[in-house]
Image (cartoon, rainbow, N blue to C red; front, side, top):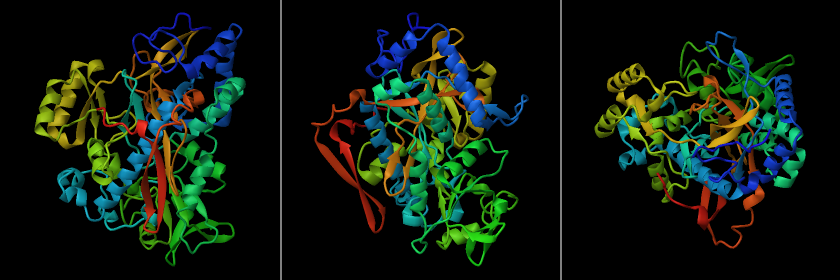
Length: 514
């Protein structure tokens, strides 16, 4: 197989420029692929799929008639991002996560951003993920969002935009780690020669982030990953991360609150748990504080959390920043708390609760992407240009009935990556979910999960909607270009008694391109 007939079709392609010339970071990979004997690449693809199957890296599709457990489709042609582009992404995500952390803390305390009329009060108070139970809470070191997966897209202009924030229980990092292991075995020399930045330190970074939350009085913290159980769509990831970190994997029924602490039931009796990496939504965490009918959580755990005797990542209440209507205000949120323009711009967004924006959306449903404010996984969404007249009429009624619950955005020409289709390559649209950890520092995994829309022409990359994944390579092809640029710094206080300095190159501070 070769790329002689590959056509970018006018889209921004991650491996080829507009003249179909390989981008600098992709040249070695493309040469390697084209040097392979006939059918060898397809053999490698099947071998990769077999390896992932043997690893058990599956996800569940609720309501599927073909069974619940699926192997997430994987395409072995990676997405490659130049280190120079990555520097801007990395700094933009650090800026965004820090500002959103300040926003969440403010919303549950003084609400200054509301009083200063930067964000409308009714927008926050009608948010489905606002948790009144979290008012006045002070998480360990005032960090709320310890683990974040921020979805990015690259448009036809070559710039990256933030599509949405995921601060509750972002999933998918296990696919990043497993995909990388498979690709390293497939193209070992290309990895070495291209200077691909590693991702395998993530479990240790995550462990350090969790250990950073342990109460100061604990000399050796006990950590658990709290899972809803084997029927959850991301159960493989929960068990995988627990195993990689060497910590306990627990369900709600394994934990009990007694004497003001959280304990794990073991064959040797009760053992105290100090830090919980929860993969369980707020509603199900504690039937005494949230949903009384929850059978998945731990009764009384919120009282222990408020008392500072157990830490949780992410903190309850972080979902306020996931609301897609709140997302539209993030550039203003960054400016309010940091006095800076957003390094990574949002996609332009129409908030349907606003009369003028709603009228525009209703008149242009055939051109826009409409999203429900608190849905995920590709649900509650309509892509206007690809929708039927009946679908557009349905969404018009939904918007008119509950305008607060909907936003709309222009249809973006997502960038593409060559993908194996039968015996040749075709471009398929992709997005990117980098993972960010907020502990003693704000760490951004160099790469992330590239999700690919496997259906020709589709813009929906979600695994629940038939999407697959690719490995993401951050290469050194642009390294060293910024060495002579001056540096600016800003201080990020991680607690009242600590501060951390982030360094930012002047040439990547940018502004809001939206």
